[in-house]
Image 1: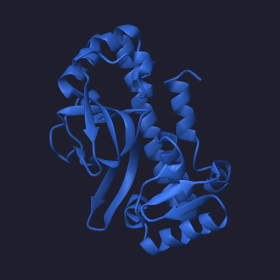
Image 2: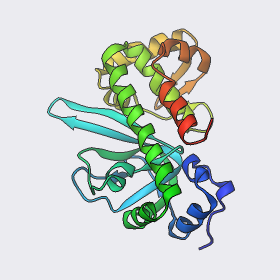
Image 3: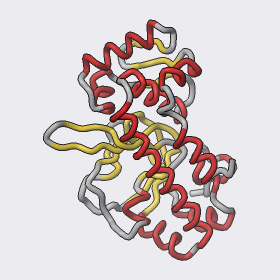
Image 4: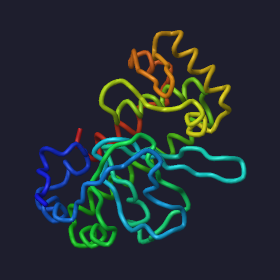
Length: 237
């Protein structure tokens, strides 16, 4: 199978690799389809593969007796499974599954870990990427604790919008309630408010972003910090 050309990739992290680091990993990248609900990492089970998403979105969720909530999101900016493999472990207690269907390059965990150990430049870049994931998780915790459901929803839609082509976010209301860790009635009211203000249009199984700038206003500062850190640490902005 021919190796994908680095300049044609959509995954921003792979594009940020040095030419040598990319050449080291390219023969091990396997394109795979990623349907909705596909489980990429099972809680408390050894991680065998990591995924550079080219399209679609993966959610990281934590759960217990009181239900589930999304604690992280990965799209074409990143790599699913980085933290356990590159920090000396082999598993995590959280699941990673496909929230929006897409495709991506799969790589065996042991291959990436060996390259990480051997290459200083790759190790520096991937450690920076781990920092961006940590910042996103902390920002999510801060947002969930201090902002209204409407602001949290606006931030979530902006994060999805960053990772998708076009303005449509395929999502069901009941699933969105799980992602935000709130009652479905609260999500319905927040969606109505955003729709009434001309920020979005809601349809069955789909939300269309109509005015991104207005969504950022509603997000009220909860959106932007992790995104700026990604640009600074990974893309040198």
